[in-house]
Length: 213
Image (tube, rainbow, N blue to C red; front, side, top):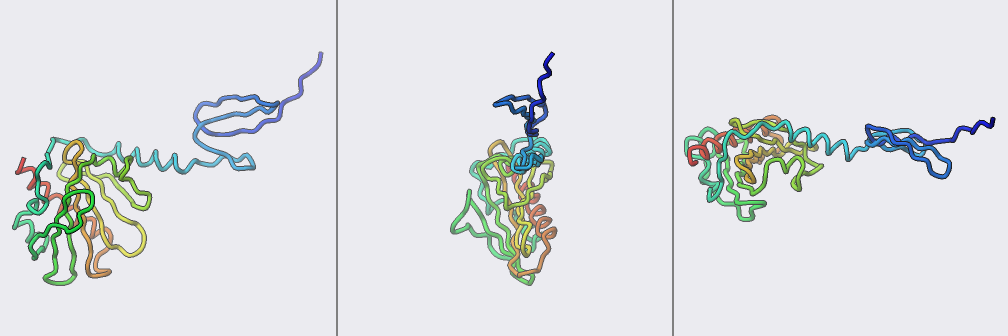
């Protein structure tokens, strides 16, 4: 009886369930999810892992308790006078000359240092898009949270000196309320402080929106 000699093979880890491929006398074990280097060693597929991480963040968002329409809402009217005092905003709200991604209002706090500004805008997009959609940016750090019981995203650039932080609240399907806190006095705030300021302003604007609806 003749014994067939073992075939040489390369192990490629790319998934959960292995598949055996035989081509040209080479036995290959394929497992989806990882790739291999030229030495045959498995290593993670970083883009796939990043997408999975962002998907997990989107899944961690709380369910929206109700639909609050932004249709026809003026961003400059979403913070009332008592709320402006809470945020130490002393200047008259002004419409942004060059709004980005939706109607935007600018609120300046420049009566005394440290100077800072809030940008409030309404965006026609689902809040999940900042995790898994076209608004996702690899240069930005995004974290799920809740603001006033609504699903929200904290977005900031985790590099260089802290300059701004944005809170995005999914108030309705296809509608997001965005509030960005920006430091004007350089180095006056830490990133956690800017994110807390942004979240506070977003919560106040959300209260106004709830009363409007």
